[in-house]
Image (cartoon, rainbow, N blue to C red; front, side):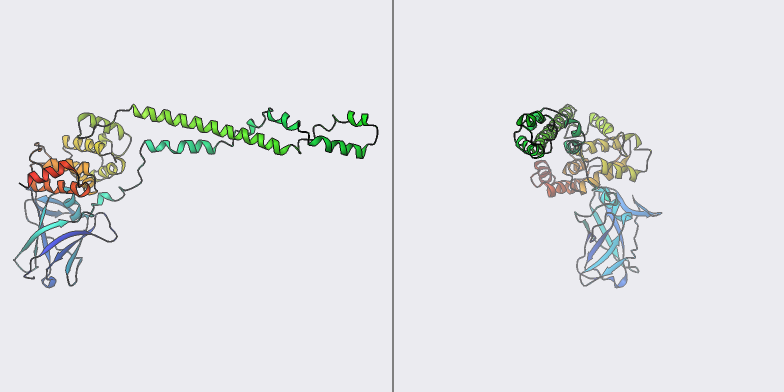
Length: 377
């Protein structure tokens, strides 16, 4: 072990893989081996591992890492979701204590976590999101591409064709042909004129094509107008739907969230019946609206599904959602704290951490800046 002061930080892998990361330790001599323990503030205690899963407990627990590397500057310990997920979900500040395998002297420092480190629940949560309003955009395109189908029925319109047949261009040619074949008197040529009248259609084809083109254009314009009117009607109908009220998750928010997710994996009714991790992943993928997600979190708190509430808070806050991060900070802020089962006590340091996370994404957030200033006094 070096006499220099040690430092430790959890950083993301390259490429970034949710649920996996590296603990970088500076000024540690790996010659004597390495074991470590992690302690959280706020009375959570120490991170313990039991049967491949980690949880917080009052007794100390030493991790003995196997995947360890060292270079001239760092000792790097590869960790998986068993260690990483509880750290990100708790949203607290941590101390890490290091010790050689056969020694009793510990070295302790703050364990920082980089902003781009994500829990395993973030895997797949960045899939493409299509809001309800965006679905209306492709409808006019779909309708217009189908427009050629009805055009054969529209081509039978007789209005433009008589005008095309009336063109004088075809008449001299027919008269010449008749004079060459039949040489009687002009009276016979005039009486024979009605016979070839159906034949001018080939020579009149350019004009008829123009007429048909106009009909097709008019038909397409009509279909586009109908589609636009339908889209406008849909948009006006959407404006009448009650929106979720921002700034807090009330009982009405919970009812709206239930309606939004009634047919999906984030249905409130299934919160206690499906696997917790599966439910959280479904919510993160299906619920992009921050206020709707807050309603799910409040429902989880009210029904003692604390793991769901903490996982949703931590994942979305770490992913840059300032609304969720601000609400998470207030869970620990002494000014806003209300006694509940999931968050047992106020904790100024944890509140500061999440307020500072808000400011990283929104430097001009006045409420977060004010609370940071007041809590640091």
